Image (tube, rainbow, N blue to C red; front, top):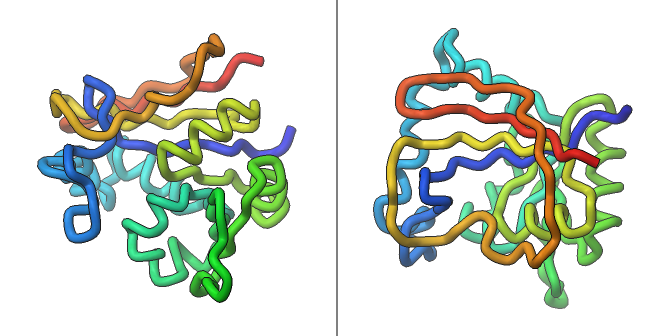
Length: 189
């Protein structure tokens, strides 16, 4: 079996991945930064450090276009120069992404290119739009949800536009850490 295409996403208990009014200059929305407090422990030997080391060991990134733009295009390097595949509906003439990033308009081609580039390492997925597209196409293998102990009340939800398809998940790992529970699910096929 090839290494997984795995979503890594911090999420509030009520399902939000960003606070309200996420935009340039306020990329995580109002109060959305709270979802990433667990990264304060990313250099630790504890569970959050373990998860962070795993995500930094991925061999490629699939990102939605909105996430890519809000992240300042990561200046062309998400981590360690791994290829970044930006799933988008449209590519403007002359818009060349920086560094290791490239635009892809087809979800199946995006997944195939990311897997090939990642080799024997997992592919990291960023962004609700990309995650939903991969899920609908049956191309997402795992979800790594960093469930943060907060109710944001409003903002951008992770699973708003999945449609009516029923998706079974298998919990394969749960790590408790300060202020967060790291949950890894495998999609049952």
